Image (cartoon, rainbow, N blue to C red):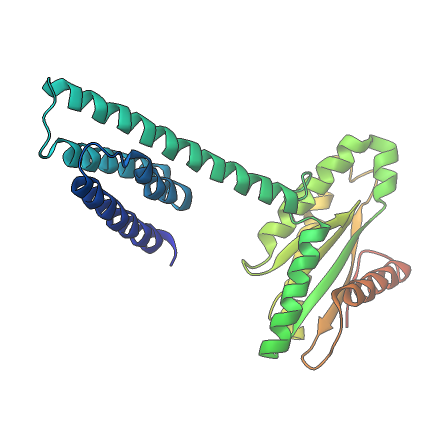
Length: 276
């Protein structure tokens, strides 16, 4: 389940669990407190869904607790029950907010651990994991894919002449360009320095050639518009390996082959694409 269906599904589960807890709370009487058990479904919904749904669950939990507590039980003053209900509500709201924020922080930490901080694309580890997964899928489905190794030409000269700030700007721009130039199921990674890799999933040679020709043109257009391009002509050399079904190979071997093909493109004059 995704999106709205996911929210509806876990909301119904949460409501069912809270109803069971409220029933047990009513049957055991007001002398035995069940308050802490309401936090379980409230926290579950806040963790797995949106904060507004978590807060709504907190309100429902407080209302159910108050109903179970005041049914067949009278306080010396009616406001005592209201006060107790507000106290429970504040506890449930605090629990929902805390768990939701904790979940967001964990997701952010997980994302940062897989993302290159300078460019926003996958780091080397995350890209290799994606490549391993694509190899498994290719063996299962029999569909080919393309692995592309990209390295910038004259990047060191750019750093030496204009400083690392200019180099960092170029890397960020290239990362953004590659990320928006591929399909949603493709993968872009920065392997280190000025080396990038692309994983064109479930693509045959014709599809890979068409996509990479377009990407190379976009790279050329972007680089020539940067302020230092008139003095230092930075280009990109690309080596692309087609992985076809029936070939048993590891991700490290594929990366080495694509890397070697990229260096061959450099030796042939740079600013070119080799696809094999």
